[in-house]
Image 1 (tube, rainbow, N blue to C red):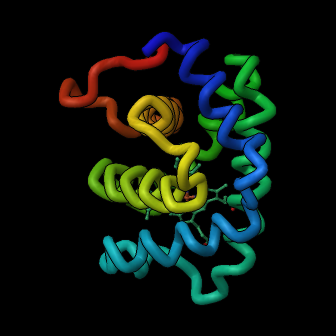
Image 2 (image 1 turned 60 degrees about the horizontal axis):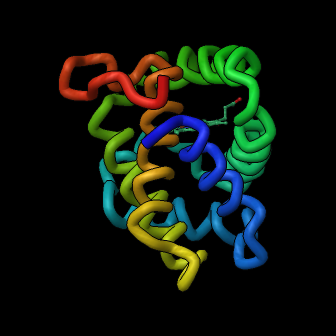
Length: 143
Ligand code: HEM
């Protein structure tokens, strides 16, 4: 999928009337920890602080969709933090899967295969910019 179409679809979900990021984020972490309990050891017990940061981060990402340079700066710093925590591609895969399945529930009738593809492509692009998915199993996307 072309990057501009992908970005437009992602932006449309962010702007949807059905989207409530403050409710979405805790729902996402609940799904993620149920699907990937081994990831929970990385996280602080006070998850609320992280949820607030994630909210800010997603808002930044949405705002920076139009500007690759801004996006790159945000994501390389974020990637360094995650690398230091020894988080792996497998965690990222599970993270993306949990993210899209939670979003599918949030967006309900507005969710379809195209939006699913757009979000998966976008989140893999984000992961790559965070220096994950660098092996050949994950070819370059959204360039
Ligand atoms: C698209 C993918 C992701 C995004 C956008 C993202 C975003 C963020 C942000 C914004 C923070 C706060 C950084 C700060 O303190 O300034 C954070 C922290 C963190 N993230 Fe991620 N993250 C992603 C994937 C993952 C994955 C796959 C894991 C795997 C387990 C993970 C685990 C953590 C942990 C453990 C923290 C630190 C919590 C703390 O001690 O405060 N993240 N992430």
